[in-house]
Image (cartoon, helix red, strand yellow):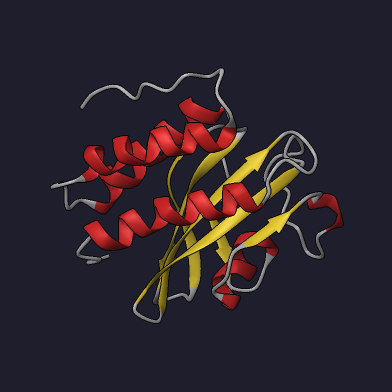
Amino acid sequence: MEEIIIDANISKEKRYESLLPQLSSLIEGENNIVANMANISAALHQTFGWWWVGFYLVDKEKNELVLGPFQGPIACTRISKGKGVCGTAFQQAHTIIVPDVDAFPGHIACSAASKSEIVLPIVFETEVLAVLDVDSEHLNYFDDTDSKWLQKVVDLLTKNQPWKL
């Protein structure tokens, strides 16, 4: 597969429903985590047109997140555990939806254009290995539909990867 085909005129939920099997097919049989994260970032960015979408990987030695594959403007390279939305999702090991990033205590402003955010930890067994971070230039952009379907995307990674980071 070399192309993601999604009708932009269908509902958000229908776009996710259409995208998920295409993502599964795209990463099936590929065991390189960076390649899979890169393609997932590109497919999500292409499908939804978000301001920024990508991954931060856990640097176990430093106990912080380090920038991984993404689509969008340049980003923060390292994020301490517990800092900002990504670091908090890493620390707490659960999804965080932020309707207004300026109202989130300790928000790290990698870009002033980012207004809302959703971050999902990628947990293998009991350990957070990475996070999926998505930013929008619109306030209150992400909801439970995004959380539900992006979790399915994250689940594809944990199912299809050997997790040898």
